[in-house]
Image 1 (tube, one colour):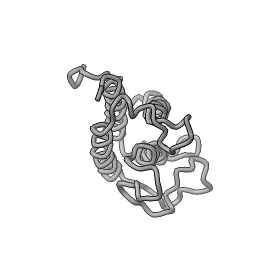
Image 2: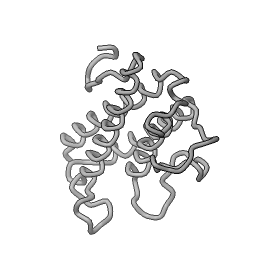
Image 3: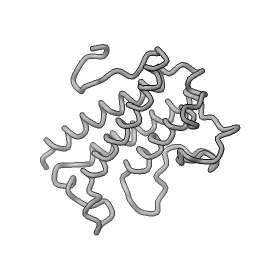
Image 4: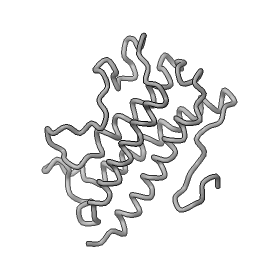
Length: 170
């Protein structure tokens, strides 16, 4: 089976995922716990990380897809009434990202160019594997851009652009 397009998508996804991981690592704790436009920084990260976990899965059925399960009080709703008393520490978020990285590696290992055009829900053509992957790349990058803007405005290090096939620090 051909994998040229699959590997291109993997490279783009992995580079995006790398930037998401770096963002959590470079964020100072005081900013991690603070709110911006009424949304805690950590909550904005949880929002997009949770959806990576949701969308990037081997089966799109009723089976469990979550790689880590947090209390139901942790919502992905960025406009929830209150985040008071809630916090996902950076080390836990990095752990969550690590297990998702393992999961996405397995998913890409089992994809091929032909399967990329298959609908993940069977009869909904707008949800092919390609749609899912590209949608996640766009969603992650949107949120990284927003959060990098906060870090940049505060004069803090940010998650720099990372393209695939380049040495770290380039």
